[in-house]
Length: 104
Image (cartoon, rainbow, N blue to C red; front, side, top):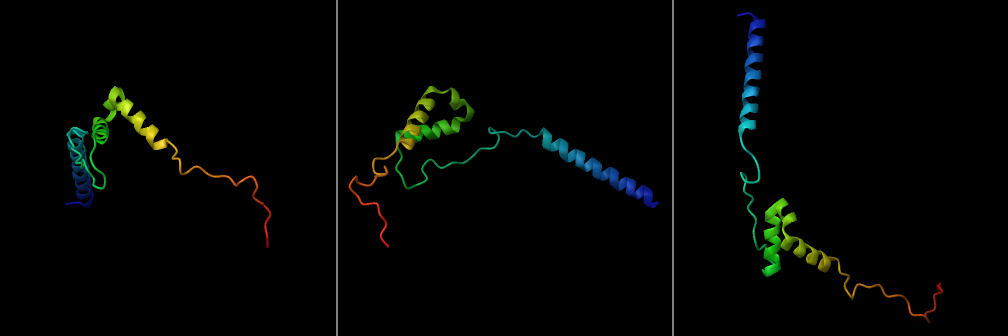
């Protein structure tokens, strides 16, 4: 067999295998409904409560949660609690009678 013919046959077989693999990958349905994600409801360290269960439900809804009024209200409350400054973390300024000179 001629070397050119063997090279052409090898190239045709490789291209055919590549096209077949591409078509098979494209024909498979892939998406969130096809690939389940296993998530633990309680990661430990903190007790389960109703608000946490609702946040998990909203998380699992995905894009549909943007239309759910309960999720929007819950996210707003969670954001408010998270961003609320604590009373102890407020910076305290020096007293008005404090001497500000630096001593060597």
